[in-house]
Length: 260
Image (cartoon, rainbow, N blue to C red):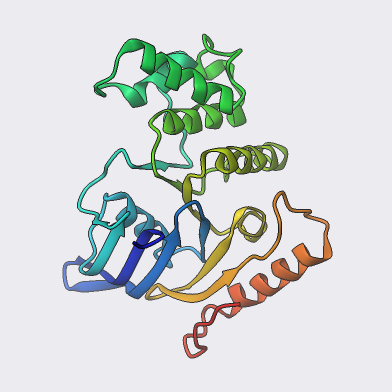
């Protein structure tokens, strides 16, 4: 039985606009193991968000396959939840009601629903803010509500598209630590899209660097550092420097893919 939660195999994607064809992804293959945090790192236009949407079931590949826990992805499911940069909270609903939103339509009793909502809110340290509205919260706290809503649904996979990009540095670092703490407890598989090298090194078990036009996996790099990581440490800066160099080289299509 495979230990892979996500398997992307030989995926191609083109967008046709009139007579013009934009080749977005070319023969992309990668996997994400169960309980792993993997980052897709690449420059704008390399197709990383398109890949994330395919894993989430929001887009389909022209060629190739996308598998989630051994099943082909054909549509969005509650097993795989997407978190966007735009927080998407309903302004007229409280923190509690926004988190409950993710469970609407689920066949479960009120007691179980309340427990899942409260457990999720405790995980993100928002249990004392249940009756506040989004406009009464900071940007970081609003993003925590979004994370709690996803956690309440108990997904196998969380997909994150530049989730902390709109936050200031302090709140971004704070939420990165929150995410690691939660993931360590829940063992959720996480696939992140970012162009922030520091964020990728701090969070990831593996980083997939993408090249552009069309998008390909340029490098697959394992980050062999214990978590939480010391941003000032020598080993941390080794990876940061190495990935920065590979990131800059990712436009060179002649260089072969490899793993370290």
